[in-house]
Length: 425
Ligand SMILES: *Cc1c(COP(=O)(O)O)cnc(C)c1O
Image (cartoon, rainbow, N blue to C red; front, side, top):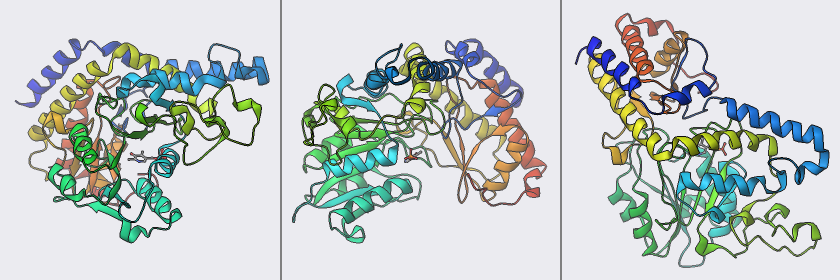
């Protein structure tokens, strides 16, 4: 297929896109093509409205905002948990909106890692996100286990993906806890969550997932798949804004236990203000909250989740796959001569929401794209991530962004930029 036919294909796909109307709900800079919704999703008008409403509740009610207004703050984390549940395939009492990925991981590991002489290893993968590994390291240290010895990392054959067989062969009777990403943040590989959990449970290992790069992009069935716990942020595909409050999932079969890190907002709601010195945890996932919820960082999520409820995660996934398929076709056609290596798995069942390209000049190419109002995402040392957000990216935008990239490569315009990362990359 040539350039003109590819453009016609894009126009046709946009015309038949049943989710097209959601684009108008987002603030998109004029002439900009935003392909970085996997790092920070864009602001929607609904998220903006809910944030202003939260400020107005504070203005109007003062302290009584905890119980008054449309979204009383005292139960906001629980009600947002309920609204998040369909995105991850959970019961409402299994989900709470709280913390950030890293703080929630600290809580989950503190709660689920109970090492003894024979079962004490934590298993992650060698491509895992640094902050997740830092949390594991400190939790091991707190329990007196040297991370150099007790943190095992599943090796990657190609430095981009992790094979299921490798995961399986790394699990043993010594494995106490496993933490893996649902979608790898660099390559975009989607791991077979159900198979991993089934296998790991034969060894009585607790299995948790970091859903940072799958929530809002890929449907999940965490309850049915028997996942023990999960954590995520909402500022990526879920568009809840910078520092937006994250979330966690704890499977019902673990409810009623004492959380590893106690805090008064994890109390049973009716007991919290008894101010007793002995802690009575909530009977559900709410028990894993720690301090006062970040209301102003949670408010945008009220608006965001109402968009997801209307759009439906299965329709979003369908469009996301069509968009990444189309992007792959554009890359194959327009960029064949320019030494890009696609590192994202091609099978739908193994792919998250973004496409990752390796190139030795990746940093300078990203800078050149940004100067042309196309916003990709760079990961050191040589990776370009391109994320179509099915709520607001059009097929035509994908066409023009790759056409621009072709031009940048043909004219070697990228060579005018330093091939090194900026502070935020
Ligand atoms: C984005 C991301 C994080 C960020 O963690 P925060 O605590 O929310 O800052 C952690 N892990 C992964 C895999 C991520 O993609």
